[in-house]
Image (tube, rainbow, N blue to C red; front, side, top):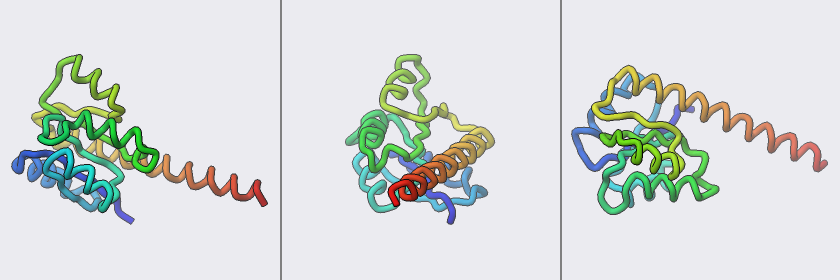
Length: 142
């Protein structure tokens, strides 16, 4: 089963660029156009990873990240904030919201694909660990 990546950015050119950069990564891609759309797509698409722009209409990337990480149903989704913001305060806000990593714009294709691959690998390992934990718990209850 291939991984699912949600690209959340209000700028069409940015979304298309990220999609093109990820063409060689074995994954399904979906796009969201603003913060509210991102939360809706999370429900229907169930992504493993979100490439999340910070400056978006309706809800900022910080707000979206915070909502997803506070919800037990979505807290395991990996979030890579893709942002033109590089001020220390913005990074601190992202960390406080629960982001897993940052990538500054303009995005470098090699850096993006390597980070995405590593985050998907980590997500797969985390998911497998959780399955094993649940299996052990079920066996102990017998």
